[in-house]
Length: 339
Image (cartoon, rainbow, N blue to C red):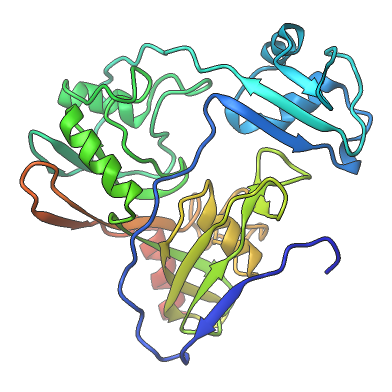
């Protein structure tokens, strides 16, 4: 297709072949501070600069008034030139925003129940429920994993500052499953290095639409911001980073498939974007699913971080944990198996 990136999907094996062993992955990639650059698409031509930038940075949860302050301070440029909040953008314009470092939020302990899978003096592993944000941010100052951990642990590493104490990695708000946190700086440094070396084991399970025809495969396709909706991500060759997802079929249900997934890279929304890209979006995904009314009774997306493994930062012991699928995902699978 013209002007579209080449799809890179490698499949091997027959429909009955066993799933391969899990692979290690990166930590999530996210933007916080620094410069963000993109090109205005034809559909956005003529929009006010403040409106366009606010919508483009929707996932950062910044207000329009905040964007207006950035524009007035010179933090926003169009084709390298300063602009006004009510200035118009044109197709092909290059927008650049020097996002200020986030002002520290005061993360307060909150008595929120946690499903603790493992805990010692250095590390805690929890099974995060779907719908829970990992760390405080604009628009999510409370009710997060960090707020719950501060109440439960009282002691978390300070490497990530007051906004994200103890947080080594994260999973999407709408993804359930295993998440680890560091209780001191020694543990944090060790776990962060393991992510950097791709030696952390993380295995996801997803129920997707359609019958995936191959037993296993790899999607190697770069991910960047969606040119038509800046709060979403898409496979694109513009302003993107390489993204690689390995998958294996666990079970087929004619028009649905249960997959095991391992990430070789850790881009924002990577599994969700890649599954949509190959024509098998995740059931119930509110952003990338696109099949309203076919959620099998689930109250959210069928994506679960089911396995987590790492080397203990103090003892050197290899630890591996697993968490069962959430109840509504199990019920959806049961309904498919018995229909």
